[in-house]
Amino acid sequence: MTFLQALILGIVEGFTEFLPVSSTAHLLLAEKAMGLILDERMVTFTIAVQLGSIAAAAILYARQFLSVQKISVLILALLPTIIAGVFVYPYIKTLFAHVLLIIPWTLIIGGILMLVGEQEYSKKAPVEERELTFKEKLILGCAQIIALVPGVSRSAAMIVTGLFARFPRSAVTSFTFILAVPTMFSATVYDVYKSHIPLESILSIPFVTGFVTAFLIALVSIRLMLFLVRTYTFVPFAWYRIFLGLSIALFVYL
Image (cartoon, rainbow, N blue to C red; front, side, top):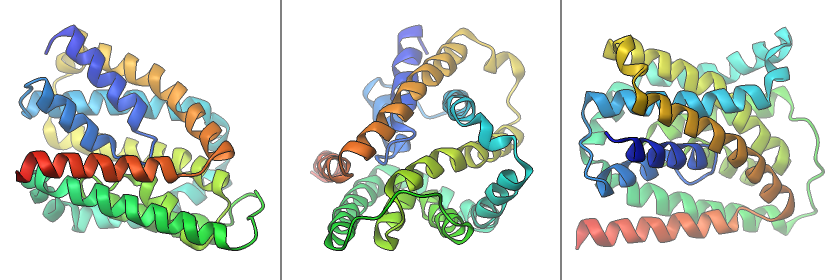
């Protein structure tokens, strides 16, 4: 992997990780476009850039991790995903062998659900912004289980759930970023443990480049997402998912 390839993949990961568009899909497409092979080294690189995104969210929401009570809520909200990951993910991982056949449909279906959710959300009186309740956080935590399927997007799963349940829009978006830290960190630690990744690989120039780039871009992406949510709706993301899914489907199936 060259320095330029690492830079591009870091940008892709940092920009898409916290948007409801599936960072996994975008990374796979970028890797395919650059002719990179999905081997153990690429898996290790993906872990490195994900750590960069995690670090960005952890810094922006550092105060959320200084309270024992808030950490306890995050752990409880994360538990359903951990349990599902242990028992279901080994089977879901087999889907990655056919990932380009699956991603178009998860992107399209997710986009359609987002459009319907926005329509339902806007039918009734506007929802006042407030802090999410414990029950609402637990529901959103359960919703991200579906993101184990390639192309779904953890952010999209929680956002769509929030739309249909009429949870406050900005609060849901912020919680997706906060919950992403323990979710992605635990998944990364598990991948490192299972892959037996040597330290020298993680500290190589391409990997450090990807990590730093993803970190810096994610800092901007998170703030941009929060601005867009407060100003607009999720409709542009929904149509983008549908367009991207259809484009991939045409390429794969035709």
